[in-house]
Length: 244
Ligand SMILES: NC(=O)c1ccc[n+]([C@@H]2O[C@H](COP(=O)([O-])OP(=O)(O)OC[C@H]3O[C@@H](n4cnc5c(N)ncnc54)[C@H](OP(=O)(O)O)[C@@H]3O)[C@@H](O)[C@H]2O)c1
Image 1 (cartoon, helix red, strand yellow):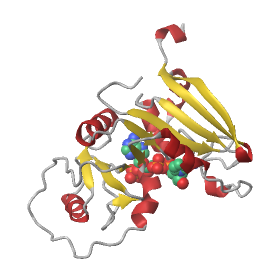
Image 2 (tube, protein in one colour; image 1 turned 90 degrees about the vertical axis):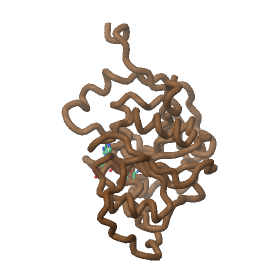
Image 3 (cartoon, protein in one colour; image 1 turned 180 degrees about the horizontal axis):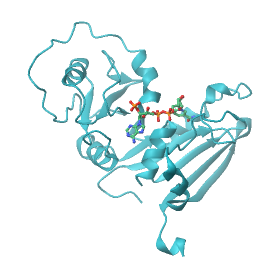
């Protein structure tokens, strides 16, 4: 169960039977729309992706109509709400402010909120203000996920959040213990390429310990057309009793 200070967090992903997530590499798979249909069924107030996954949306943004004035004064590190009460939110995790959103402040009708660290350059904050994106700060140089989630709830009223990749963000959030549920569309495809992003990527030696940190409890299993299986798991922290 999520703590009341943050949204309930569901990680929603499609994977091959070998756990990889680069869907476009699987030529044998029919384009079937399961992912978007289940996304709608999960009824999130918001969805969130990592910097690499969000890059495609930022790359297709229109540039700002006018150059942003290069003001010498410092920009305060206060959270900025460009819009309240949106019908949905698209949340981008971008610790160093590398995504250039230009004039794009919506994705398919959902208002863009960027989660930053305090280390981002002032010019990036000016550009976000000019572009009409909201932003919040969580951490000095690395994202503090608990703080980011608490702010998404308190500032934007987000109570149910879908985390939708890629693997490094999913892995970081799993490691931080802030994912409550996994919604996995298991596709009848083999990827096979070593090093391809997987559902949860946790770099470094600590990856070995994930199996002893999170316990997955299967709560639903549904066969969908095209040989896809929709699996839902509740994610529980591992307790001392589990280890005994
Ligand atoms: N099958 C699916 O359902 C599905 C869903 C979504 C995405 N995808 C695929 O997944 C692929 C991308 O996966 P990915 O794992 O490479 O990328 P990702 O998780 O979207 O983003 C990785 C980036 O996030 C940042 N990052 C990593 N750890 C972080 C942390 N602890 N705190 C803050 N930021 C952190 C880093 O950005 P910096 O480099 O800026 O430091 C890193 O490069 C794409 O090809 C996409 O198509 C598949």
